[in-house]
Every structure is written in C-alpha cells, then in structure tokens.
Image (cartoon, rainbow, N blue to C red; front, top):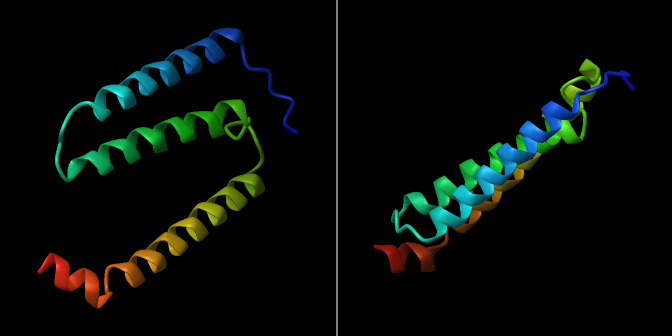
Length: 99
C-alpha cells in the first residue's frame, strides 16, 4: 500500500466527471449515430472504467508491479475479445447474411 492520501476535492471532481460521463451515455443512447453507436458507448465506458480504476481503486498511486498486472489483465481481455470476434465474424452464415 502506498499510503498516499487523496483529498476530498479530487474525489468530488472524479465523481462529477463520472456523473457527466453517465449523462453522456444516456444522451448517446437517444442519438442515432449508425455504426458509431457502439464506438461511442465503448469509449465512454472505457473512460469511466479508467477513472474508477485510477482513483477509487488507488491504481494511480500504486506500485509498478500492480500496473504490470493491470496491463496483463487488459491485454488478456483484448486477446480474448479479438479471438472471439475472429470466430464470430468468419462464420459462413454471417457472411451470407451480410453479403
């Protein structure tokens, strides 16, 4: 544990940022952006997850080994999502329906 103390002002700023991003998520749900809907939603979700991990889980002030473990977890998640998408997007019934 780093023993770093974060002020209440920082926590309130992060909370306000999370509320703004939540409002952006709700607003984006009512706007038809076509194929960009998923990209916008995922971008907002990643921003919120990053704020929560950095400040509420104290990752910002933790040791480098913790950062390595988080990077390994995110890399593993990306690999699993990529492999899943490579399977789903190469199925013949999807290619026939899209083409």
